[in-house]
Structures are given as structure tokens and as C-alpha cells.
Image 1 (cartoon, helix red, strand yellow):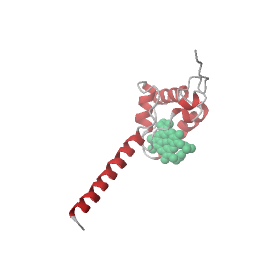
Image 2: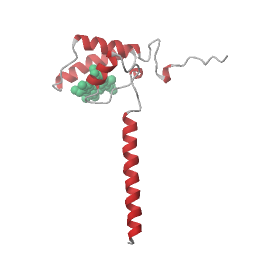
Image 3: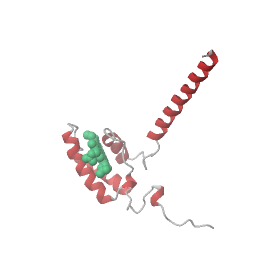
Image 4: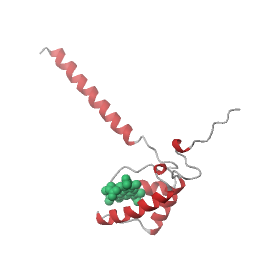
Length: 119
Ligand code: HEC
């Protein structure tokens, strides 16, 4: 095989690696949490993304969040991870419910089905 052919192949492989890495990074950040500066969002990020990526708050209803957070407490205990304290649980749940599918002011694009008022 000629030298330049080899170089071209290596270059193609390098491009593939870069593209794959970029997609991985983009994928990990593709669902920014609403209201990221709030205490609830930060606790949610720290405590609920150790085992899986944090689920979008708007992906569940308030009642489902209540159930899932309760369920995760047992999952965490079973995995020898400290469960949420009373205060952490309160802040995380308040945060998740405020942005849940059925929240009045759900900030997820899918939930904002309000008609666009044109002037
Ligand atoms: C110790 C690891 C761990 C931590 C920490 C953790 N989870 Fe999970 N979570 C899991 C596992 C494992 C599953 C999948 C198995 C299951 O659903 O029981 C899961 C599944 C879920 C699901 C999807 C359930 C479904 O039916 O699809 C939600 C929602 C969820 N977790 C929310 C949370 C929230 C909110 C927190 C923070 C309070 C959290 N998780 C923290 C391990 C964890």
C-alpha cells in the first residue's frame, strides 16, 4: 500500500474518532435541566445522576416523581449509597414537581403547547 493511502486512512479514522467523541459530549449535554441554578436542580444533579443520567423533570408527572423518588430511596440503600435526607428529598421533589409534565409552568418545549399570539 502506498504511503499516502495509509495516511488518508489514518486521517479518516482520526476524523471518525473526533466525530464520535463530539457526539458523545453533545449527547451528554443535550438535555439541560430547567432552572439549573436552583438548589433543587443542583441536588438533583449531584444525587440523582450517579447511576444514570438525570431524567428530564418534564418527562414525568408530579405523582410519578413522588413515586420514583420514593423508589430510588430503596434502590440507593440497596446499592449502599446514602439515601436522600429529608431536606434533600423535599428540595428535589419540589424541583421535579415544579417542572413535571403536569406542572402549570412546565418549561419543557413539549409541554408549552400554548398558542403563539401574533401581534
Ligand atoms: C444507586 C444508584 C441510583 C441512584 C443514586 C439513583 N438511581 Fe434512579 N435508577 C437506578 C436504577 C438501577 C434504575 C433502573 C432500575 C429501576 O428502575 O429500578 C433507575 C431508574 C430510575 C428511573 C426510571 C424508572 C423507570 O421506570 O423507567 C427514574 C425516573 C429514576 N431512576 C430517578 C432517580 C432519581 C430522581 C434519583 C435521585 C433521587 C435517582 N434516580 C438516583 C439507580 C439509581
